[in-house]
Image 1: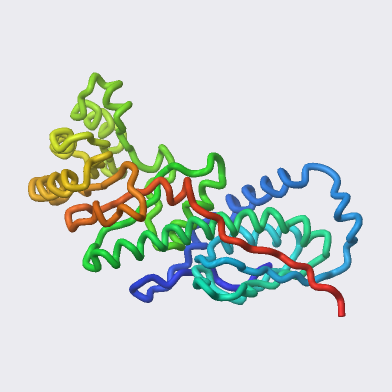
Image 2: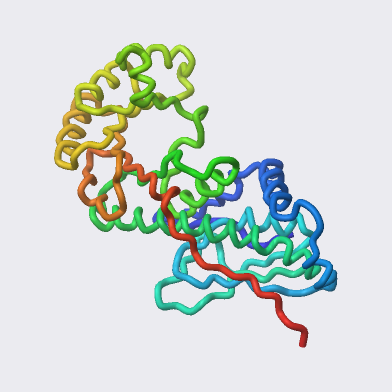
Length: 308
């Protein structure tokens, strides 16, 4: 069992319970798999400590945005432990602050220790993504406060089920997830186009036969001419990939004037440090692979309390 909701207060003061996104059966399967990977046979350490009830404190020890509560809850729930959160999802520990007691976990001591490393691995990584995402979003809006677009992650996530944790971290940090997988949105990249004899129109037309009205199509473009062809063929989103900043802004303005309904994504090696070079009113999405591929983990620890 666990207390505290997994929510984040965005700039409009609306509280969003992102935990509701995760199907309980999917969450349980993932967590059981991670626990099995960490403890596939006997637990000698568990034998040493025994089964007496104990209390453990979860400490957040480095600055960042806390994220991953639903996954940590599920870890300890599967081990018959109780976790009580003292801070909400999206809590931010600022630079210079001392470590913070963010949750208390109670249960049989061997069970607490069986879940310790799995829980810490999850929350440190999910919080790392949320922290990187939150920083990128804040930087973007500090540069261009009127910008209505999205800072987004990419599909460059950890293979397997852990990618869902990283996508969740993006949301808690205030960024957009982008597509979850190959099935969620049709993205026609350079390899797709080249495999269709270089015809963007042909590739989009073929995709539309399957996507119909219910699925968006995005096309990766290397020039404004390719982007124009994609938009004319019916693409919903054009990705201006690896453009020089000045050229990107000029081409984005041109495309928005011709196709105001088409979303424009800037991508390709963009980092939080270089966002300022790409931000403009005509760009709807700036995607960064580094948000889920090169993030720094946040430091947490779980400490069993000694008996009085």
